[in-house]
Length: 362
Length: 263
Image 1 (tube, each protein chain N blue to C red):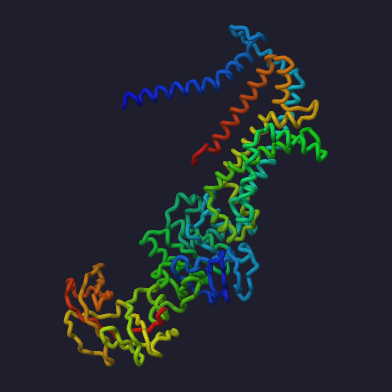
Image 2: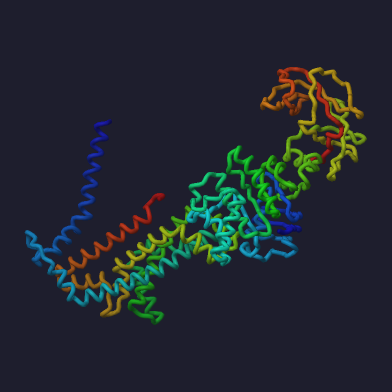
């Protein structure tokens, strides 16, 4: 088990800047998600920690030891690949035992440890199967077992769930997290799926165009996005644009929206000029009475008037698209009443000032 | 339309028949004559194995056969090892001059053997190495390597390089990765390539002819020399044996390697 430090890492592929002075700390025993769109550099960062790519600048430490000149096979890491990369010419037992076998571990010890790790991933009894005889979920478990059998210092996961269908993915999200907790291993998980990042990790790092945009615990990053990119990439956001005045946002139609600055260094609200607010769709309350301005909260709520364009019904919840002043706002509602507001209904939207985060317009 | 296409198909069959006849009738006649008592190709064929018995006492042909086998085996081992290593390098790494090197590997297939043979003879004399079996082995390896590279590279196309990365992440050294992951996967291609290399060497006449020292020749060279001196059905006999071996080799290749397609 180990702590990983990435300090000032830059990486170029030709003239392409894959990573630009990225620093982050991965604490011992925690589950980290590196989240970003394709081309954001998240996989490059993971491959550098593994030792498949080398930095143009900066240093990577594992347990305080600089590993920049250490080849992959000496880094003592475990990695699960996107396509699992199971050895097709070996059965499950030999796949899982490979890391021990190349270290010259004796047969009895290999049998014991492979048995133990197969039990951990709930694959006991499948030792003799070949990879092509396994289901997608089973292959995933073999890949995880193979990566863990050598008791590596860090577990690296490269979009391991992307090849699975939705049901299996949700199941494996829970399984991966259980296994990680059982073993207590520092885990770095690369994904472009914000839902995976939110549900699985202790800590999220959002990457965009080779920069670490924001990092922190999932709830903190979600509630306090520090940029438009972060607000839109992790979860959904309604972005309101206007002019900043006395820390509040004055919209185009003159409505004043009370905001708060992001707890994560959002610079909005301090000066005057154009500004952007982010409001999460589930924080907004819809009322079919467009003049419903009664405030029950101690602090007055923000209000807007709009018109229903359409709804998306998902059983337990509803998503409304609301026409407002030339913009489309999204509102999530739980299906409590069993009613649906038809298109064209004038509505009133309201939400707490505390749910209105001023973010720098980038 | 239907009628026309039927006629086309029939024409195709006739064409195929003619092609096969051109290829195999001479071989069949030769094989048949090797079992004929008469040395003047007199018909009807009287069954006899006298030419095969005569072979047993033809020391020149036997020596030449042994030389051929020796050269072919050494060539096979060297060309397969070097060619497979080159294929792996071309597949794994990006390096300066890679395209050029890949291009340079293939001319031996397209340059006429006569020219390569002359060039090698000149060169080997110039560096003082001269002629002989050692020179032949060098020449044959140079000729066989492109075939090995082509066959092994084709097999490597279906290999997933992430498997090597996975093995390395598990602590395997480059040698362990190659021996335990990569080679087992490309083994059928390597086997096919080895058989190709053997065939290229064993059948080689032109280069061997140029590079053989007086008194030391290979089977094709010896057959050619014997024919010039005066034809005996012994040549039919040895040729029939060689064809038999070649056929077995070909079956071996097709067992390991499907031409022009995926297995």
